[in-house]
Structure formats: structure tokens, C-alpha cells
Length: 114
Image (tube, rainbow, N blue to C red; front, side, top):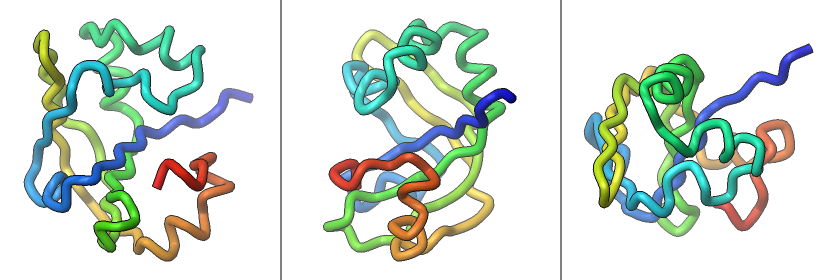
């Protein structure tokens, strides 16, 4: 049985998920809080890796102190530059901060990640 994956984005910027794109520093893309086998698979962020990431659902969450609900959706594009990566996305739903916390075990999110 193959394991289902999803993309988890967490930001301390209270406006990170209010538009349809955000930029991450290159040193935070893929590698931070990600299992080594997934880092090895996706860290190149080439066309093949981007297409695979675009095919997986996403959670667009805020750090707890922002006190905001998370979005659910998909990546529509990733633009990679030397200094960062621009994630372009479409949100299709919302998950409350409370429900996200209730699902931490099932989603394999560590307490300190939020």
C-alpha cells in the first residue's frame, strides 16, 4: 500500500494565505521539518518534482499565535529562484484551527510545528 502524502505549509505571517501566492526563503523549502526520504525526493524542485507536489492536496496553516483557520487546496505553480520559491495556490476549503489540532496525530504534525 502506498502512503498518501500532502503538502503542509505553516507560516507565522498573518497574511501568508490571504492571496493566491506566497514566497518562502530557499533554505526553508522542502527541508524544514520534513522526513529525509521526502527531502531527498523533492529537494531539487525541478519540473518533475513540482508536478508531483502539484498533484497532492495542501494544508495552508498559520502558527498558533496568528489565531487563524487553515486553508485546504492545491499548488497551481512553483517558481524557483536562487533566493526563494514562490508558491502559487488555490484554496478550496477551510479547516478550523481547532480541528487541525484534533487531527495532528492523523496528519503526523508535531505539536511544535504549529
